[in-house]
Length: 208
Length: 208
DNA sequence: GAACACTCTTGACACCCTGCCAACAAGCGG
DNA sequence: CCGCTTGTTGGCAGGGTGTCAAGAGTGTTC
Image 1: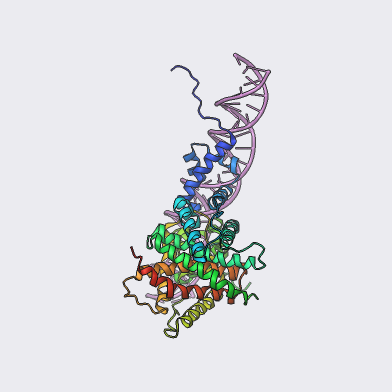
Image 2: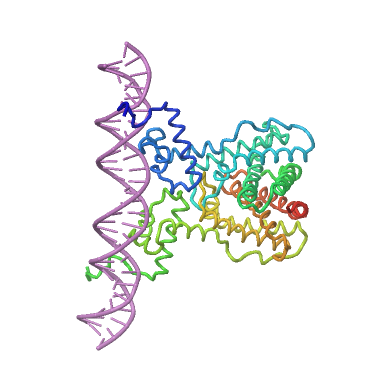
């Protein structure tokens, strides 16, 4: 009993505390669906009073949205690489780059793109949309298209379609383990090649 | 004021009442995310006491799962049609059939395949998986494959990958309206053709 | 046609979760 | 060592969920 000066709790910088709570929330939301995670759970894991969560994030939902937003913001490392080479080489490289990225982030990313059963959530959808749009833009540029292309919006839409396939393929590979990396690579790069070389030119004639 | 015999409520057959509650729940879950729909909301729309929901479905969550399950169970009308013709003809027909079906169910189906932000739900995932698996089976058979094929599981996996693209494409068409039906048709049938003619044979050599 | 029984339906109770806010105390500056 | 700033706590009010005993339609019987 040297001194009676044992603080019941430690005082942190706002940013620090905020980040700590955020991290715990990200873990829990990655494990269970939204409704099955209580703010009490998050507070407990962070070793903090429940009220502090509201102090920093306002609402459970806002905290959740923040987690989703960050989970989907892809690292700015990006596709600055591989601008030239044959079409096949470029698609192969792009898919490879992507699969590498995914296999690192694995758990978080998988959880982030898991489809929900039913019930649309405007806010979440907008975040997902935005992320898809960015990713699609990168892919298009890597494939040699320009943002100035007057069909840019349609191109984005087509690639976003492709993004749906990419996500499903990732689940088959990492989650269900029904396809190995090489097989997923084949499927994705082949389809991407078809899209760029075959479908996109053809779609031009149908632009309503 | 003829007689004082005005019943406060009407007594229904269990199946009938169950179905009525179910329908109201399906509407609400289609409009808002799970957490934003209260059992009180459902009960109110059904004009029924809240407790009755638990009586028939046990739990809000169980009711939700029932709704998801039915929303994803595709009509048994199925692909009994079009077994022969060239590959291009078959893919075209299959995609057409599918787009017709989707454009009818529209709202419900769209809501059902909308991705959630983050947080995996075992139960829901299993239901979605099962539905995808069934759909993939139908597609494969329409493309001329047999359930006896010793690579059936892998084929299913590849088509389920494709299903991710189909869902994304449907959203672009019906929801975002960035692509018209004809464009979506082109993309989907072309990719399906590529998968069947090109990717699947190639994947054989990589079956680990 | 009145009493009866069957069971569908209600209403209230106990418990948990969320957001809010005033009071508290950790740690720095004087 | 004292006081001030402000990060942090703890409890309260409102609302949602699941349970259960009691109540009220409705067909049946005599």
